[in-house]
Amino acid sequence: MNTLKQPRQAEVRQVISYLEEVDVQTGEREVLAQFDDLIEAPNWTSDGRRLIYNSRGRLYSFDLAARQSTRIDSGFANACNNDHVLSPDPDNTLIAVSHQTAEDGLSRIYVLPLAGGKPTLITPMAPSYLHGWSPDGLELAYCAERNGNYDIYTIPVDGGVERQLTDVPGLNDGPEYAPDGRHIWFNSTRSGLMQVWRMGTDGSEPTQMTWDEDSNSWFPHLSPDGSMVAYLAYRKGDVAPNAHPPNKNVEIRLMPSSGGPYRTLVQLFGGQGTINVNSWSPDGRKLAFVSYQLKS
Image (tube, rainbow, N blue to C red; front, side):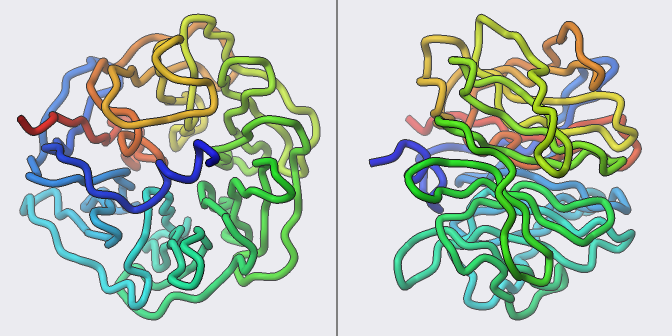
């Protein structure tokens, strides 16, 4: 069994979830809400008022002022995993999701209104795991298994022919567009450990951006102004380079998008579900994330 498939399934874990935010300058953390269930992967809406997360295959909107959650009507897409991304328009009118389809249990990408509504299939081929939406709103970027290898692809947001951007043995995952639309950032095992890379939006000039010999680095997320990158780091030896399991001691790290040394922003118990998607606040001052506690 490929190690990537099982962690990406909508799942139930015996945990308490803490929805948190952290000030990227001071490192001060605040718990926004506690859930007696698994929640994952908060997205911050463009107006700064809500966080979108998934739980038990469904999508939820968390009102930051009221500290209350409301389920989003996602129609038949009731097995959504933690790969959901908001459209880049000011009102975030749409949300794209990875949903485990009933006919074969494989992940495919759909788009639906953030206010709720019927999902539209974008990637008939599977498995496909969403991660990025281009700043111009025209393309989606995702990790997909084709012919036995996981590579990075893009596809028009209305569907069509997918375009393969990487063709390297191993796992290439987590593609996310830079805010200026010039690069796609991703993580790859091509150097041995999982490291953060970037490339042109056409797949050209792949460049290794992290050189963390003590860890495996996952899911780079660009700050709104493009100056900083947040990513998740697992301790070397705790996990295989191509695995991002739950229930591990991990770090959220920050580094300049131009490259250079990182600094540890948060140490926490988490991993899968903590920051699978971009969770920067619109003003670039905070990150949202999920930490966990095992139920006794």
